[in-house]
Amino acid sequence: MRIDVLSLFPQAVDAGTGYGVVGRARERGLLQLQGWNPRDYATDPHRTVDDRPYGGGPGMVMTIEPLRAALAAARAAAPEPARVIHLSPQGTRLEQAGVRRLAALPRLILVCGRYEAIDERLLQAEVDEELSIGDYVLSGGELAACIVIDAVGRLLDGALGDSDSAQQDSFGDGLLDCGHWTRPEQHALGAVPEILRSGDHLAIARWRRQQALGRTWLRRPDLLARATLDDRDRDLLAQFITQWRQRC
Ligand code: 9WO
Image (cartoon, rainbow, N blue to C red):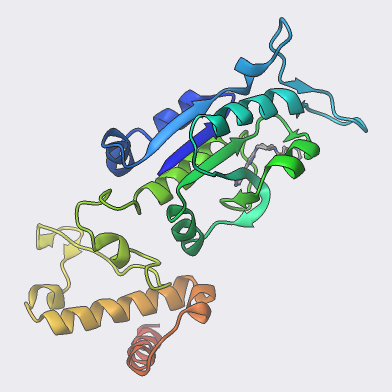
């Protein structure tokens, strides 16, 4: 997969995606990342990329031309058609299903804004999609782009050592993950749950499923409402809820 990033701070995106699973995917060429700085395409002596907003108000707006020229250069750098995505709080919320959809595309161009906004005409003419990573305002789109690249990059074929672990992750089936423990078995902070040491793999899988269902019920009822549960899941959850109510 190829991802081009338009940003006044391309080094921030480079650094934010340079480590761990995604850093390795880049090193191995599974993910090809290239930054494009609109400032390099500004034509005035001061290399201006912003101007005051029509209608007044605080802050500055990114101008059309440097972004348009940078985008044209990025598009021309490879033959694949690219989906152009603007990271913005006005976008559609990104969820794991959306991450999977993006990971199946051959090429993305991520547009990162700075200042208060990008001129609306550039967005309407050139952007296919606006994506939000959550309902908060950042100082720019770069950290949001890093999050998109991280979530997408780890799904690329060969990025994860164990090919199954992406599927087993939280949200693989729309539920939160169960808890995890490692050595030591006994610690001042507590003991490892007995069932995980039982060696009974069927019972362990059942218990983990129940924990995932129970935690989702406790912490994210919105996710549970959207998940598809079978009869066994409903039994496991009912049992969890009964035990939880007895604990209170
Ligand atoms: C700045 C601002 C100041 C006062 C009142 C409202 C305001 N909104 C913004 C604003 O949205 N600035 C953006 C900064 C311009 C585009 C890039 N920036 C950005 C992207 N901030 N937050 C994001 C973002 C992207 C994806 N998901 C969540 C947030």
